[in-house]
Length: 276
Image 1: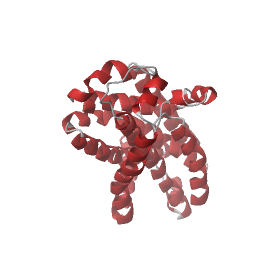
Image 2 (image 1 turned 180 degrees about the vertical axis):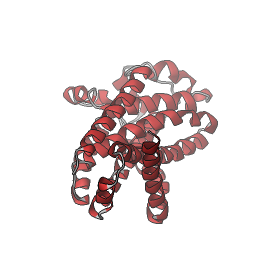
Image 3 (image 1 turned 90 degrees about the horizontal axis):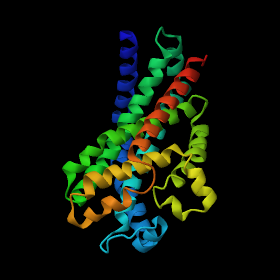
Image 4 (image 1 turned 135 degrees about the horizontal axis):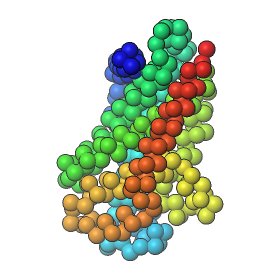
């Protein structure tokens, strides 16, 4: 048990150290949240107005409601999602450069190695999400409340890092990894309700969204963000009984996200143990 914990921490620390030494990745990680906010946030907020959102959700929004209130936590969730999945490419790099072969022949637990990969992806994606939460807290002048969403970011990052590792276990090259991620992650993001309500989608697409675990992660983070960041503001106080009453219950979201995270981690570790 103690040896497994040391192995997990060693893999986790190595991935973080590799990330930190790659200054281009660090700059990209720190700047990406602002680019997502600029292009997606301001762009989509001009495309979909509050009236269309109210019609889709069948609710009456306050007259001073801004669609950016709805959109911003979705952007945070998608940022965490892409970062968490992207970090698992380190497994492919280790395989291509021979480091993974050395790990596989060493007397260490392969489950511990898989857990270390998931842990590093969770931490890096949560860090990037917290940058956006802090930025949003500064924007809405309630940064202390925004920090309360940290456990939700951690849960979402954990689920997506585990999913990314599960896919990476079966992939042998970085080219195939990027192709697989585009095929998997982009549909999950579109069907998550991050940029617009699933109620605006065709009926058949909305039904598919309910089987998308990312949908529950986005809804969880959105409700947590609205509770923690926006509700101390007088202009957003009326949204509590409106937006939080939509979609799955908060407890359902948390259970689904953590449950899928555990499932993906178990499957990734199980398949990784079978790798020769």
